[in-house]
Length: 445
Ligand code: NDP
Ligand code: 2IT
Image (tube, protein in one colour):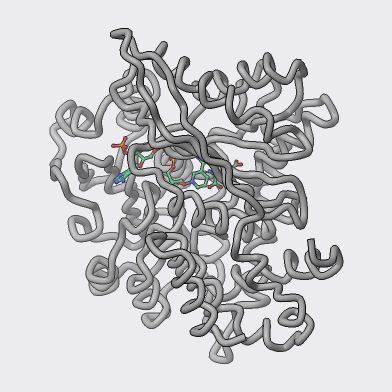
């Protein structure tokens, strides 16, 4: 297999899917050497089968808004791979959602889930519906209409959705409710459920906490403590806020948060009281980060991202894909940033990733660093199967162990002759080998 020819062919077949091609290209470049060591992989045309999703459902979702108007959105579910377990991955509701974005996310999810050490395949779904500005009843009606179409294709041993951008506990609750009614069963289809109906403790915190645990593992390779470090975070949703929460508990300083409208800079680091306000603002009032800036008299930069606004030791992009470009990466490195750990999926552009690796800073791609969320989803599935629920301590201990295991896998496959750990290569090769071996064993299907 030649990576360039493979990608040229994929580009010809899937034009107009830039995010999907971007995610595949990064993985193919990392695994090219190892793939070519096993001639059987090519004989079974394994890479192509692994890069093209098993199947894609797309459908119209019609619902009625509060003014009695009929609205139509697109709904999708990409079932990418079930080589090592049932399809598993979140649902995204955002106006930008299209098939390319969900295909990249489902592809990444397959490798991420492989790294978690748990039995989960890869999937992703969503809609171009935006919950922003919608009433609770509108969100409920949309979720119900979405699931009336999707319910046939999911199930506890088939495909288990969860949250992502625009989908949190509220949306999962509404979708689970309609799923349960249509399927006439109470099962663990959906993770991130409410605690009262099968949700795992620590699932809301898991992605942010897991990212900080991964970061601690990376810092330990250079003997660096997290206490006192200045950390720039983008986003102010589930991942960003729980990342900030854990960093605060560990004595680090969170110097920025953002949303799609702008960035707030917190020069002395966010306080507990301020972070509690952000949680309330985002989860209860569904407000904007500008309101937080206004309340505490903090500098706010409309339309800007954090990376050139603050000096930080560590950057943790936690909003969306391609939110940190080459220029911003160079600005971070020039400002002394020595670690980047991705809470979001594919937040750094390919040029930014090259800058980080060339500068030999600690750089963890999302599929390794943000795997804590889906890991605790996997633990939620285990608890649901056993009809038991574990304590927060038990789940947190398992989460820490899984993040340490992922870090070890990255070091095994990613350590370069000069000792530098290329976490991109490590995560891609480790994630790939497990799925590839399972696919070989199962034949051409
Ligand atoms: P939320 O919806 O809770 O928060 C998303 C945050 O990112 C909001 O602050 C939002 O701002 C901002 N954002 C979203 N889209 C854009 C955009 N196009 N440009 C700028 N800012 C944007 O989502 P999550 O916190 O759950 O997800 C954040 C990232 O983490 C995503 O990349 C997701 O795929 C990834 N992730 C999530 C996991 C989870 O368990 N939830 C697990 C692993 C990864 P605004 O409110 O203005 O839209
Ligand atoms: O990107 C992700 O890993 C998620 N949005 C979480 C998926 C899940 O199934 O918990």
